Image 1 (tube, rainbow, N blue to C red):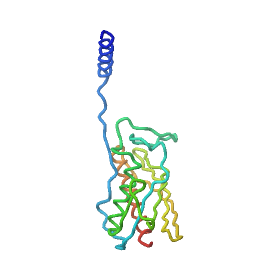
Image 2: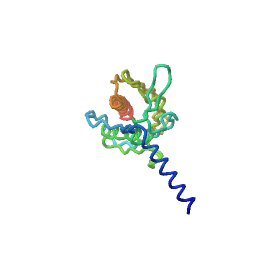
Image 3: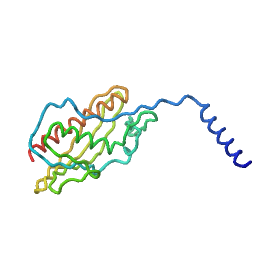
Image 4: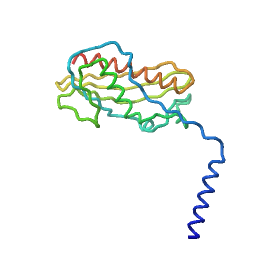
Length: 192
């Protein structure tokens, strides 16, 4: 019993020491958002589409938002975070954008949702998805469309959007880039 009280007292002291330091920085959380302003409908055909994220850099596999520095280094923010993992948010937003421009399509996201065997497969390979505050975003994504009939389209999408000095500006710039990518994918998918 005496040992238990000593441990509890020690834990209480440790907790109070942690609280004595400076005020904790408030956390800010961000999500990518679909392009609700999309007015172009690229096709009214009924398409069955499956989106799969096949390659995702390990440095992005975290909630901290990543920025690029001058000396080819990256920085993980202590207080600016994604509200959900990017590897979940990114394909979901692309699906939502495609659903706006290909309204009669059935769109699934692997591996969480099962698709039909005849689905047009869209594979995304993320190379870069970050930015440099007060400069620009950097998006680099390779993608393929396999219609299952022997036709495979491969393209390389890069985008840079000017941004201000806030993480909110950076997320807005990244979101704009994903909207542009979604439009390019929709145009290609409309011809399948």
